[in-house]
Image (cartoon, rainbow over all chains, first blue to last red; front, side, top):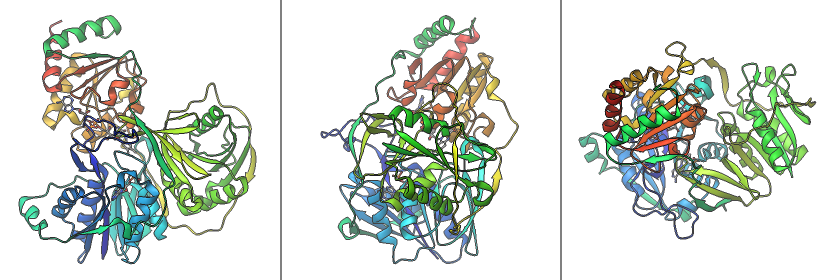
Amino acid sequence: MKILVCIKQVPDMESKFKLNSEGNWYDNSDLAWRMNEYDEYAVEQAVQLKTQVDEADLTVLSIGPDRVKEMMKKALAMGCDRGAHISDDDSFKKDPYEIASIIAAFAKDKEFDLIFTGMQSQDRGSGQVGVLVAETLGIPSITTIVDFAFAAGQITAKRELEGGIKALIKTTAPALLTCQLGLNTPRYPTLPNIMKAKKKELLSIPVAELHKVASKQETARMYFPEKRGGGLVLEGAVGNLADQLIKILKDKTGVLA
Amino acid sequence: MKTLLVAEYRDGKLLNSSYELVAFAQQLGAESAMFLVGAESVLPAYNGTLYLADVGKYGEYNPAVHKQLLLDVIAKEQPDMVVFSHSSYGWDLAPRIALALNAAQISEVVDIIDGVPVAPACNSKLRRDVKAKTEQIILTLQGGAFGLEGAPNGTPTVVPIDTDVAAQVEFCGYEEAEAGGVDLSRAEVIVSAGRGIGKPENLAIIEALAKALKGEYGASRPVVDSEWADHSRQVGTTGQTVSPKLYIACGISGAIQHLAGMKKSEFVVAINTDKDAPIGEVADVLIVADLKEFVPSLTAKIQAL
Ligand SMILES: Cc1cc2nc3c(=O)[nH]c(=O)nc-3n(C[C@H](O)[C@H](O)[C@H](O)COP(=O)(O)OP(=O)(O)OC[C@H]3O[C@@H](n4cnc5c(N)ncnc54)[C@H](O)[C@@H]3O)c2cc1C
Ligand SMILES: Nc1ncnc2c1ncn2[C@@H]1O[C@H](COP(=O)(O)O)[C@@H](O)[C@H]1O
C-alpha cells in the first residue's frame, strides 16, 4: 500500500508579523516556522494507518524553500518512510491551483492508495489544495475528517459539520482525505526515531520539473486589519491590572454589583 | 454582474446562512439566481430563479453529483461569480467547481472593497486583497461577514433540475453532537480557557475565576480536543453560541471560528500575552499579561470584595 501526506511549513501564528517590501505578503525573516497544525493531524493519521496495515510505504511531500526540510525531518521522525521536497523559494507566491497541480504532477504515476492533506493552511487558509489534488487525479475526496477507519480498501470517515454534528461517509481507495482538528493527537518524535529519521531518504526535486500551470489569482496587497476601535489595551503590573479591571467591570457591567 | 448563489439544506431545513449569499449579491448590486439541493416543501424566501434538485434523490452530501448538477446550471446561467458559504458544504464543493470551470477560487471572503475580494490570513492577524485572473470566479463567504437587513422575503420561481452522474462516496447519515453537560447559553458570565493555559492543571485557575464571578467556565476547541474540558463547554462554530453579560477569554487567540460563538457577548475581556492577538478586535478590554499570574490575582481580589 502506498500513502502520501502533504505538509506545509507556516509561521508560528503567535509571531509578530511584518509586511514585505512589496506589501503583498508577510516578511519571511525573523519568524519561527512550524508544521501547519492541520498537517500534523494528517501525518499522524498516515503513520497510524501505516502501522495498522501490514505493508505500507509512506511518502511525505512539501513544497517550499530549503528550510522546510527541517519540518520534513520531523515528519520522518514521526514515522514517514521517505521525503519528497519540492524545492521552491517562491512557493508563497503560488496560488492553491498551482500548488495542487505540482502535487498532482508528482503523484500522477505513483499510484498512491491514500493521500492525506490538512483541511487548510494556517497562513493562507484557502482550504482548496486537497480537493484540487483529488479532482486533478480523478479520485474521491472527503474533507474535514475527524474520524478515519480503513479496512480492505474501504474507507469510513466522519466529516465535521457546523454545530458539532458529524456526517458518516464511506468510499473506496484510492482517495484523498483532508484532516481537521480533533482527528487525533499527533505524537512527539522520540530521540531514537529522530536519529533513525536522519538516515531516511529526503529527495529534493526542483519545482520547475513539476510546475506546468499558470496561477489563477494573486495576493495584490496584504495589510493589518483596522482596529475596530473602542477596545482598551491595558499593560503593566499584574496586581495593578486586576484593580483596574475590577473598576471597569463595576462601572460597565452589572456583574460585580 | 451576475451571481449564482449556492444555498444549503441540512436535515430537513434550509440553512439561514443561505441568506448571507443574498445579502452579498445585494451589496454588490448584482443580479442573482439560486441553486439548491433541497425540497419543494422548504423553499427559501427569495425573489428569483431557484434551480432545485431533489434532496431525496441526490442526498444532502454527494459531491460528485452536486458538482454535476451545479455545473449544468452554470453552463445555462453563465454567472460571473458562483458564491458559496465558507462552510463544510461550501469548502468541499467550491474547489471541485473551480477546477472544472478553470476558474479562480477565493476562500473565506470577509469583504469586497472596490470590487476586490478581501480574505483573512494568518489566523485573522492579517488581511489580503485577492485579485482573480480568470473571468469567472468562485467565492466562499465567511459566516456572518454579510448580513441581510430585515427578514428575508420573496417567492422563488422554481426550475427543477436533474442529473444521472454516478456518486463517488456514500453518505450514511448524521451523528449528533453529544448531548448533556452544561448549557452555556444560559450563563451570565463565562470565563473561557484557551490553549494559552498550557496544561490541563491550569484549568483550575479559570474555573476558580468563573466561580468567583458566579459564572461557568468555557473553552476553546484545542482545550476540548485535548480532553481537558468537556465538549459541552466548547464555544464556537462547532460548539455553543453564547451571549453572556461578560465573557472573559483567557489565552484564546480569537480565531474566527471561536469569535463566531461569542462575539454577541455584551462585554468582552481578553487576557493574552500577545498584544496583537486577533481577540483584541472584539475585546472591550485586552489585558496584556500572563494568565497564570493575572487570573489568580484577579480572582483573589474579587473574592475579597
Ligand atoms: C471548521 C473549523 C471549526 C472550528 N470550530 C471551533 C470552535 O467551535 N471553537 C473554537 O474555539 N475553535 C474552533 N476551531 C479552531 C480555531 O480555528 C482555532 O484553532 C482555535 O480557536 C484556537 O484556540 P486557542 O485560541 O485556544 O489557541 P491558539 O490559537 O493556539 O491561541 C492561544 C493563545 O494563547 C495566548 N497565550 C499563550 N500563553 C499565554 C499565557 N501564559 N497567558 C495568556 N495568554 C497566553 C497566545 O498568545 C495565543 O493568542 C475550528 C476550526 C475549524 C477549521
Ligand atoms: N506548499 C505546500 N506543500 C505541501 N502541501 C501543501 C502546501 N500548501 C498546501 N498544502 C497542503 O494543502 C492543504 C490545504 O492548504 P490550503 O489550500 O493552502 O489551505 C494543507 O493543509 C497541506 O496539506
